[in-house]
Image (cartoon, rainbow, N blue to C red):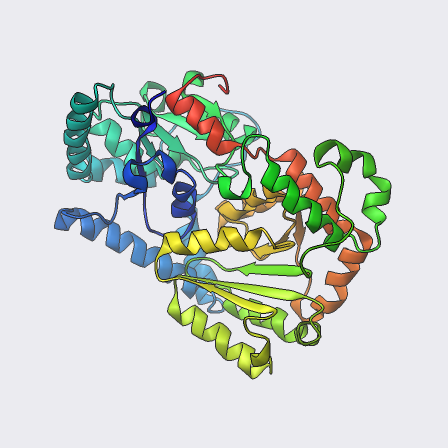
Length: 446
């Protein structure tokens, strides 16, 4: 198939990292590799910008405010009710729209998003006529742009990539059974949830979450298997897991190297709002002797927030670890978010344990990364946490003040090696390739 026929409008929003990180993995589908930000594009009407801006400001404020005792928890719990996910059982009709969904739909009917879709329709006509191709697919990592595309009659197929292990009613439109939006689901749980919300079976595709291909390689996963082979050595220093499950390692990865190629490495990734940086400081304080002695390497992900980078540099200095910076302490920071995602994915190749709240990064357990689960923020992350535990790839963090004790107990027992293999085996890893087949080729993954 001609490369122009494998291009789409890839649309995201720059509210937190989750939807942008998901879109980043699909950037090769986008024209000129550029993902469109539905809430921040050139020529956006002032009213559209105002609506998006107020939503983003409130989201980031409430995430930070949650840290304030009592008042923060109360305010966040009220906000969380709008995105609450109902219990799956007993199975029942959950197609009734929520108040939050009704509010979104009302704003779209008043014209929110019309400008974006009109611009894409115009570009679609120009490209289709110039290159003699059909309508261009619209692929978004957030539900609101999908609703806009359908409401304002975008002519091509509309795909919505879901980046959580379970979803609220807000992801499906009010008239879900009549919608033409096609959903690309990360797991079977989301598939069944969409059906309860009234989405037609033929509009649901189980693709898996789109993990970065630079960490996977081709569909043979040669890069990923190579990285895991070294990781297992660091996570199982006493060979307990390798002794008991040698057959499993041989079947899924192959022969392991004799020696590892990097020190035991932990990557701490906090959310886009920077709300958990103080918790990371507790870990570093407790592990500072192991860091000084180069027993472990620490990678701190500051994202694109300068203030988070400055905070990390301060605590590193305060704990007497300044000499270790750029040696066995690294900080990932970039001014541009896609530069950050690139650097983050490169560091994952040498990472042995990923510490993160259960965001979209939960699916990165598919890269054979055991995940230390930081406290979740909101009901959405509670369910991601539940999914991680069910796969066996996630481990609930113990008290950070005793990290040097429980962390190495888990490593020496082979528990982290087991979690790494569980995530690799149980989680779909070829989401990008599967999404490509659904959007541009055969629908064999339906």
